[in-house]
Length: 228
Image (cartoon, rainbow, N blue to C red; front, side, top):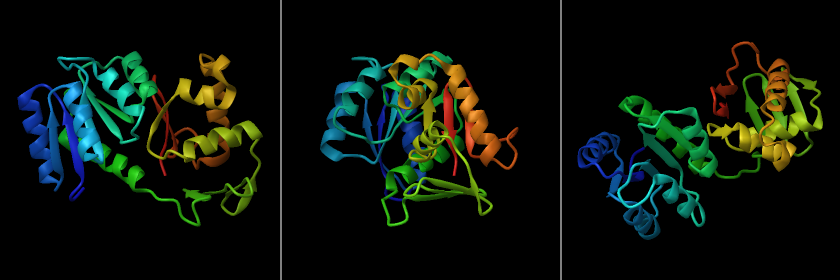
């Protein structure tokens, strides 16, 4: 995290100071904004590498910040909020947030999640980017082939499509609605049972222990996350 620029959009001064101390302790460069308008202006001017966002801001809800920002920037957004209902998490992730941490939270977990967001941001395409390896699995996305322990694994077209969508965003929480729209189309955005069945099939074929998956991980009530 050394020299990583982080924007904190939070109206409570004490929380901003707490976050500044934690981030500067990791070597980050910290910007602060107490409102949505100020936050958007700072992103435009300074182009931070990460954004930490509170939802309860005085001039607008944090969701408005996310929607406005996503029109012109893909900077990773970590939401911090006392609103910990699953429906809130889903709506924020659907709006374009990258991760969500409920208050109160531990500094160690916050920093770990920010490091994961930065790793994703720093990933650059390489000649080998079409080959993804995790655990005992290798996915060759050029030839659309999947191997486990060197042996080819047969995936149906829909299983493969679902897998590659998750592989494309390692570490990111993908909501059920997002995955259903991508794989089955907009008309199936509420058909969560489809997704559970197909995730279960992928785990049976690719995980060492499907009952305790290490790579295709459930975020309860929200969606799924691919961990490499």
